[in-house]
Length: 527
Ligand code: G4P
Image (cartoon, rainbow, N blue to C red; front, side, top):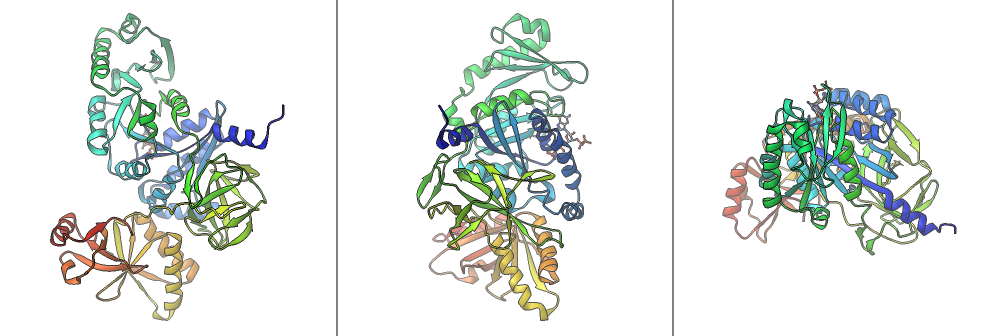
């Protein structure tokens, strides 16, 4: 019997997994990504990931690379096949590349892989990215990396996950020894041990055992390490959380895997477990209710717009997450906000360096659309009906600068640039209530650099940015705003929509203002 369109759609949805790797710089994200791509046979891409890494050290390099390649290297989506699955890894840039886009990209993922350095534990950037994922309640899988090095005890790290991130964890495997003594891991789910062999730890032997007390492990790992393993696992059996898929899928429990990306140790097991447990593309909320991926009508939303840094090509790329239906090159869809039909004729898929023209794509996939300036972040495209997906969240800026135009004659272009770049989500803009100064807010320094670069390149305006000492922005909901109440180490500003926002220099100033204004609400983002 031949398959119906719906059967094919269902099959394509079932095999897809779309996720982002969240971590602090240097935890090994590039290395892990490379290994994952290698499993998928996508060797061609691995080199590209390395090239990306070279670019992360200096912003000027990043600009150069952007220019040479024409299109962003900071926005790759990598796709590969493994064991009948189609996997989309959304890249979340770190270091200076960190920006609001990093957060927005997470909204297009159905799951996250949280990568942690065994010696360093939970670090600053991991916390921020985790919080964005936790707000959406997506499942988070933890990979504790660099097990070949001396690190902290697994129990210690589990406690930190709970204390710092507020998430319970369930170890799926457990190290046998650590650092130089590491000889392998015990897989708690499959009752097997995976042993390192050879000095470089490159060969791995997998052996089925009869529980962790099996003397086979003793013979292989020695008495000392086996005793330690038995003690640890007994404790986990008694005091640890049991595996509970429902809790994993709702983001309340994170499965933890131990491994060493550079030695390719534990990566394949991790990938296989992840593919089995992680959700397939999820439905998204819209004005027409939940839109299921198997809905035959194509729909999707723009979660990111990447400007082309190459002055010879002014176009931009809008990144679209497909929510439902089948995408076919050349199809006509409704651009709901502007109320027009548009033809999607030159879609791109971001196989790192190569920009392949996509012929077809399915829910969970990300496609890049050439954008002559018609898209905004959060725009919905849909076939046949007027589906509007929920607005994308905004994020509280943490770095601020006062902006002025160097040449007053250019004021008109300057204003146009600010308006468009704000709309695109490159920066957030505020006006001070007292002097009508313009203050820009961002979550990553790179956003300022992109802003400066694009103001000059696209609008011909030289701007001057002066860093301001603020660290927090809070939207104020209060019937009687009294500017005099927000003067100590803070300033009152308005956002684009005229909402009152207070910028604070430090946490103390913020707490004091909250205490002094007990009837006001202080929100992290616009209401
Ligand atoms: P990032 O993308 O998260 O910033 O991390 P990246 O993969 O670049 O890894 C950061 C450093 O950690 C690299 O070393 C990498 O080789 C190392 N690393 C990654 N995984 C492991 C692991 O499992 N064990 C050990 N011991 N090291 C690991 P580097 O010296 O900064 O760079 P490189 O010269 O090795 O490329």
